[in-house]
View (cartoon, one colour):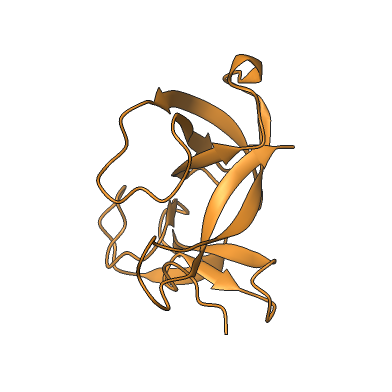
Length: 135
């Protein structure tokens, strides 16, 4: 059985973990969207929030090439960490995959990509994580 890396931020929509949606909240008072769970609006402080599904496409807002990863990083090094702005407004930070570093451009279109990741040497640690790819 596949498991989301964080069920409050990513809901898998198939049994193989190949499809899913990012989750967020929308303030019913001012209309601001946030990625992930929230107890109050970051803009107007209202607690009148509703759960929403967020877009699967976005725009690369900023990025950096990580050459010294955090301890336990299960992926390749170096890797690209991208800040993506969704059409609804929130920014989502995740790895950018399948794109040569020289081809990265602020403002380029990216799409949600799901990928299983397992921690080396840890049994039953596979989780489906969200990433971005050029698209």
